[in-house]
Image 1 (cartoon, protein in one colour):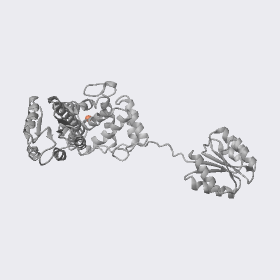
Image 2 (cartoon, rainbow, N blue to C red):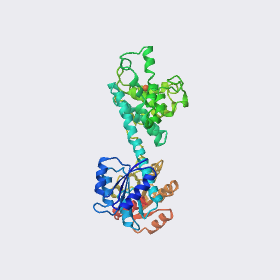
Image 3 (tube, rainbow, N blue to C red):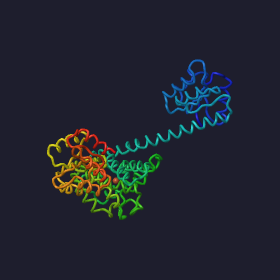
Image 4 (cartoon, protein in one colour):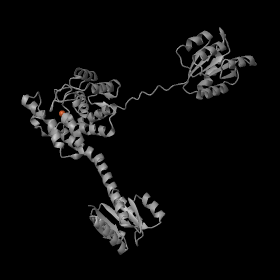
Length: 458
Ligand SMILES: [Fe+2]
């Protein structure tokens, strides 16, 4: 069971707590004050601390803080007088693992202790898995890479690619982590291959090849006693299987090969092809692509090959530098939809003034100008305007005609009509035709631009 340290200045209560906990099999050490408890904590390992709150010298809350500062993972349960809500909230904010109020029943204390221990165990396990497994995997991978300088960084690089492919396959996070570990560890069995074979310059003979081909099974066997890395074993064992069944060690084919192993097989090959190796200079992106296509569906899972090709095509996987490199996915952001203004105005000077005012109010706006009804119609084809500003009088007709044409194409398009001084009729007509606003030609174009901005924003 667990090792528990009990602190209480009252002998009767302390003995009671000790008795209750020993009765269910815990090993209990007790102390009559916090100072003594800190000494005991220096000298021995405990799984849990159960402390009174109000004591001469350091209080239980102070002890709690000191314990948490030394070891954040050691849970502390506080035992306190009834109705002390202050203590409760202080205890919780300081990270107590539980609170038991006096007087307590045996079962209250026991269940608080059970919960605290269970939670501590769970977070320890999680921590172990999250921290230790990758560390262990990297340490083992380093052992392989250390023997062959050409492999330096190979495992990490191919793991990054394998993870990216797993993400594209939308695997759940724990499976992606397994792929990562498997990718890092895939060649761990090479530890069992003698240097004369592993590092032999030049082609291998039949016997040597047979020796090299034992490395997946050796790796699988090596990991057998390590529970932490158990999930990665199928990847290690099967990373040299082939889609057509011609691989080793088990001659699995197609989807009978574990998915993680299929992913690592593609990632491993790409990493090797694109790296500087002993006998070959790195292949270019095109070279890798050719190879992938040539052996798609014979050596590799075609779906995974396609994903890798997609990464190359989209510029996310860069292979031309001699070192495989993944860059942040280019999440092709929709081109910032700038504001496009159609300005239909024949007069040069007015057009210039209006454009300037619009540019000032609508930063980055693209302003296209037409000088006639006909030209406006031309510009309208295939264009998506954010807003239009149209002079009423144009050399070949009326602005209302342009307004009608624009409205027909896009009923929601905001349109501002520019009218002459004192032409109320025109204004009314414009509104009847669906204009959003009007401005008098020659008035403040800044005010016009502000209104246009308001229309675009709405
Ligand atoms: Fe291998």
